[in-house]
Every structure is written in structure tokens, then in C-alpha cells.
Amino acid sequence: MDYLCFRTLCCKGPPPPRAEYDLVCIGLTGSGKTSLLSRLCSEATDHIGPTTGFSIKAVPFQNAILNVKELGGADSIKKYWSRYYQGSQGVVFVLDSASSDEDLEMSRTELHSALQHPQLCTLPFLILANHQDKPAARTTQEIKKYFELEPLARGKSWILEGSSVDNIDAVKQSFTQLIELLEVKDQDTGRI
Image 1 (cartoon, one colour):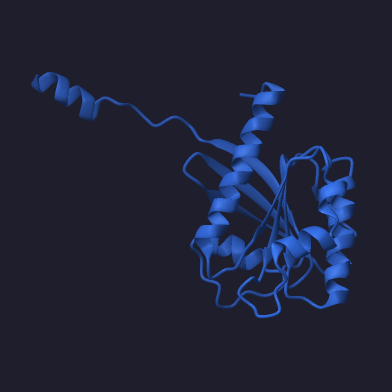
Image 2 (image 1 turned 30 degrees about the vertical axis):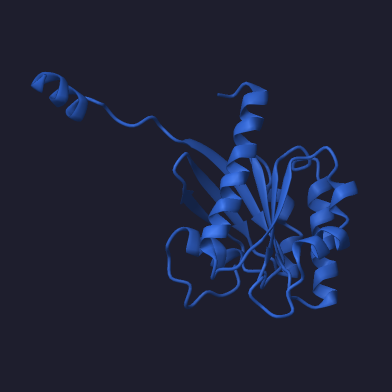
């Protein structure tokens, strides 16, 4: 009996490797991409400025590691976004749900462009309506209607969720849903 207990406790071996997925994270400047990703990685968010160019973060989850390539959202950088799409297995699009009507329209245009881009159109999308903690924030239903997501994204795998850096558990749940879509896509393509 002691041998069995010892073997159970000491001879399990290393845990199975976690799946890794390469994602691209896009959205306008000020939408909160860097803050959300930093919070997911348990990093400080005190002195975050706009991303110039891109940054890459490995975001660990229990069943997967997400290698997220965050692209800056300034006008001077957006024109280069498509150069970073290759090899992506999923897309995170962050929008400021409390932004001005003009910025919301620009976000809508960029999301429509991404959903129709040849390198992204077949990939799972996580759309985060960020800054839900602000009084002027639009609900996810308002975003869904304004962005015309139902007709535009028909037949695609996508999730629309509200988010805020103050509710990181909800953000983690949204990413967990994206991981589930990525796993389904993996199984469909026979990668696993």
C-alpha cells in the first residue's frame, strides 16, 4: 500500500504540454489593448502609453498559452496591420465602448475590414467592448447592432463581450471562450 501511495505522489511525470495559439490584437489607440493584456499577465498598468509598432505577450491560461501580438492603433501604424496577420490563428479586436461617435465609426470600419481580410476572415474573433465601467459606455447589444455584426459575421466564429480592466475575471472568461473556439478550429482542421 505504501508503494502505491509513493508511486501516485512521485511518479506522475511532467504535465502534458499546453496548446499554444498565435493571436493578433488590434483596435484604435486608447481602446485599452495594452492595459487588458498587461492585467491578464499580472503586470502593472500604471504607466502605459500608446503602443508604437507592436508588442508580443505570452498570456498563460490553464489549458493554453496565447501568444498575443498587439498592434498599435495610431493612424500611422494601422496601414501596416496586415503585414502582421500572417500566422495568426485568432483575432482579438478591442474597441472603446465609451468613445465618441466618430471614433466608434472608425472602430466599426476597422473591424469590418478585419472580418473581411483574406488572412483573418476564417479565424475566430474575440471582440471586446472595453471601458464598460465608464458612464458613457454602450452596451454589447448596442455595439452588436451598430457594428452590424449579425449579418457581417454570419458563418464566422466570433464572440462579443463587454470588458474593463477593473473586471479582469470577466476578461479571462472571454479569452477562455476564445480558446474554446480555437480548440474547435484545431479539431476541425485535424491539427491536434
